[in-house]
Length: 401
Image (cartoon, rainbow, N blue to C red):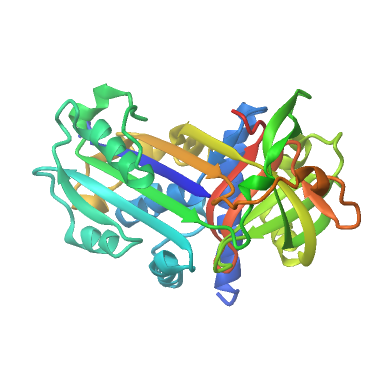
């Protein structure tokens, strides 16, 4: 499993003058944020694969909260569902971020946010101090006014940092904004882990997968017999679903799979009825079971403009040069966010090979052991169950895309 993403926030100077359980509350809020992000990005791509990372989106919004004031700050808090200015929330999130790099044996995880600053741009010492202690974040000088400065360097830096790929393409192509930029906020997250029980590539075979439009494809289907967390439930509209949780080494991170129980029920009927409370009930009700698990290999990469999503959530002042109030960044008026770009990538594979003869044909004939076969579109949710930290959320409609 490999997951990679970055979110780019490009900032310009304005051209014109209780008593509740905090852990449970934040877990539900983060799950709700994940679902809202997913539903806004998945709806226009009705039959496409989708992956987006709530962690990579929420981190820069939290950073911006340290500099946002007035109505701008209120809109950010309303969109996230919490504010980092709440001391209890601040301490809880800080503790969660601090433990992420060591969250499990066999799991490599990094979450970071870098603020690139144009030379000569003043920053508030308080703002710098706050973000420097937030989720491995840092401030770095940059020459953003150069034609290849802001967007290209930031996106290439993120691409190299999270994937190791050659930066052949940039996710930022609106070059006209770079000349005015004074700050570029880039969040990155990488996640790489090994299944607690690995799939063997010797057992992978081509099997049919029925896509969203009924097209039957032959896809590489991984197999293992494993002890998993499993349950059968109904969404709020009564559609039956099968839910499977596959853990990674250390069992602190898992991949949750949601599959319609009936082959005639499209995933699109279930997705609108997914809520944070329903997912919480499902995950709390899973039971250990020994099962044959069939899961296709898949690799998804998406690129989103978050500006339209955030606008639909009521975050409008942040992008308005006349209304944005980010005075906490430098102690002066004059900054607004011109663009918000998000790129996510996920790859799921066997993670290793084993020398053995092929046994797939025999495995397909098992009948006494329950099986979970993701041979049609399914929903996935990569998460850290104890804290509600959501790495990625998405849908597989075609494993070959």
